[in-house]
Length: 243
Image 1 (cartoon, rainbow, N blue to C red):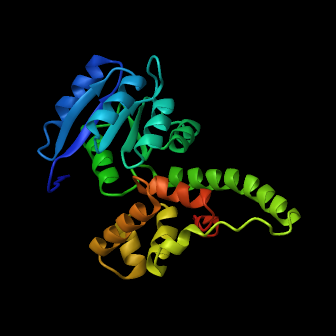
Image 2 (image 1 turned 135 degrees about the horizontal axis):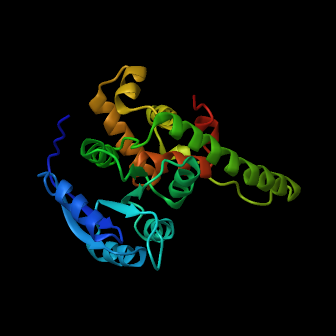
């Protein structure tokens, strides 16, 4: 498989093992369109370097001293929501993935993945794709939707008791065009850009452009977080169409 990008994307490596960082750096810098701009040995250093370097992507180890990868991702995404975070993990654990995604990660990379799989995950995230297995994406979004629905139902009950005194929150999807709402629905089903294109009878390039517009309008860094953001702010009616 061949990957090409028009300009170099900047990557930050965060792992407490120097051999892991060295291997990742060698692999990524072998690509003309990827540039390693910094290395962190723990989560705290990763957050500090991101404040200074503003990379496009962070490869974040889950287990690190001082501040683990999950907590570092939470801090990082609060300050820089546009930065894409891919978690580095040794195990494909759905519960672990759930927590990582809730923290703000776009997906994960297994440490024993092949070079092609690792590069593929990085490029997929940069291109607005899901760097995750589709079945895991579907299960993840259903689980998150269920968690958000319970507190939302309680809040709606409280508002009804207050006789409508509170001004209802403006629906998030009002910022989206009808086509973008369709794209978000398919995106939440774990569809790739090519599948979205086939479903909507548009070109893959147009589908990719719509996905990027949706991500930008929702103020997130990737399609995983776009789906979760939509659930959080009341578009569960779309996202519960997951197949």
